Image (cartoon, rainbow over all chains, first blue to last red; front, side, top):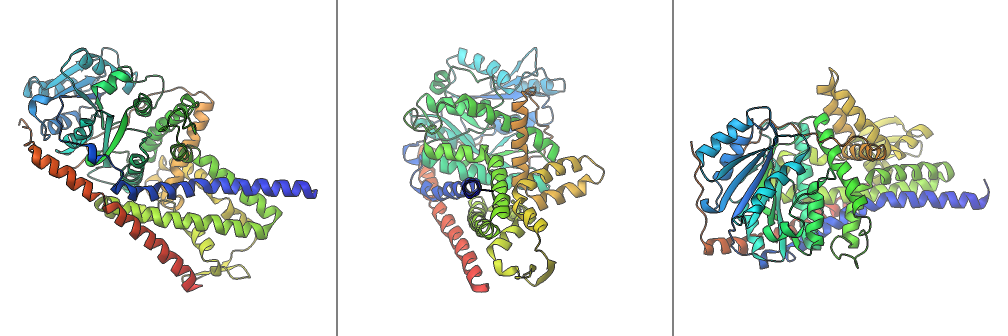
Length: 495
Length: 50
C-alpha cells in the first residue's frame, strides 16, 4: 500500500470511529441539559385550567382492558361536566362493543361508543373517525388522545391541562410509565428505558423548547392546535404521533412534557411482541426523517425542529446502528493498519462510553427512583454484560498483562491476546446486534424461555433496539408492506 | 359499580401544586450532581487501582 493510500485509509478509519463516538457524547450532552429543567420549564406560565376535554380512545378488540380504562377516566380529578369519553371501536370482533355500551349506560352523557364499519386501517384512521365527530360540535375545548389500555392516575389530566392555560402551548404529553403487574426481565428493561426516553429525555426537550414525540397514550391538544394542524391525524406513515408533534410545533405552538402527570401502560413481555411494536415505531422514524428532510439542521427554517441540538438528538438515535457498524469497521481497520493506534483509539472511545454509561445510569435511576429500584439490574445491564466487560478492559488496561493474560478483580483468565479475540472485542458493538437478532430467534424455540433472557442480558437491551432499527432500514428500503400490527394487551397494568 | 369523579382541588390548592412541582424540579440538579460524582468515583477507582 502506498503511503498516501495508507494515510487516507487510516484517516477514514479514524473518522468512522469518531462518528461512532458522536451518539455517546450527544447522549451525555442531552442528560447534561436535564438539570436546567429546574429553571427552564413551563410552570411559570401554567395555571389551574379545566377546559372541556373530549377523550378519544381508539379500540380494536380491547374487551380485556377497555372497561377498566373507562372506569379510571370516570374517576379522574376532573369536573364531571367537562369530561367526555369517545371510544372509537375499530370494528372489533370481541366483546369491546358490549363493554363500551355497558359503560355508556352506566355513565350517561359521558361515555360514547362510536363504531367504524370497516376496521384494521390503523390507529390514525380510527382517531380521525372520532376527531371528525368531536370537532363538528363546539363543546370540545381540548382533545385527549390515549390508548385503550393505559391507566391515568387521578390527577394526571388536570396536571396536563394547566399548561394549556398558556395559549402559546398547543399540546401536552405525560410520562408513560411501564406498569405491568407481573413484570418480567423485558418489561423491567422497558421500564428503565421509559425513564430514560421519557422522564429524562423529554425534560431535555422542554429545556430546548422542542419535543420529538408526544406519547401516543397521552396527547392533549388544544382545539386551536388541532384545527391548526388540519383537524386530522396523518395517515400516510406509521408515526402519526411524531408527525402530529412536528406539525404542532411547525404551526407555531409549543409542546410541553409534564413529568408529574403519570400514565401507566402495559408493554410487551416478549422479544417478538417488542420487535413488532418497535419495528413499527422505527419504520415510522425513517418515514419522518424523509418527510422533514428540508428542516433538519436548518434553524432558519424552524428554530425548534431545525435546531442543531434537536437534529443531533434525532439522528443519534436514528443512525445509531450505522454509527455502531462504522465504529467497528474503523477500529478493525485501524487494528490491521496500526495496532498501537487502534489500542489508543479503542481505549479513548470506550472511556467515553464508560463515563456516559455511569453518568446516564446514575441519573436515570434517580429521576424515577421507585421504578429505578425495581429495574436496577436492567439499568446496570442495559448495554449488556459483554459490553460492560469490554468497557472494563478499556478502562482498566492494567487488567491485561503484557503477555495477554486478563487479570481483573481477582480473576485470572487464559491469554486473551491474539488477533481473533482482539478483533472480536473491536467488532463487538456491531456483533451485538446480530446476537440480539439471534435472541429473537431463540425465543421461539423450546429453550427460548430460558435462553432468550440470558442472551438479552449478555448482549444488552440497547443493541436489541438497534437491531430493530436496522431491520426498519431494511424493511423501508425494500418497501415492505406497511402493516398496522397492534400490540396485544391483556390488562396486566397494576395501579 | 359506578365510579364517581374524585374531588377537584380548588384554585388555591392547584396553584400551590404548580409552585410545588416547579420547586421539585430542583431535584434534577441533585440527580446530575450525584451522577457526576459517580463518574468522579469511577475515575478515582481507575487511578487508584492501577
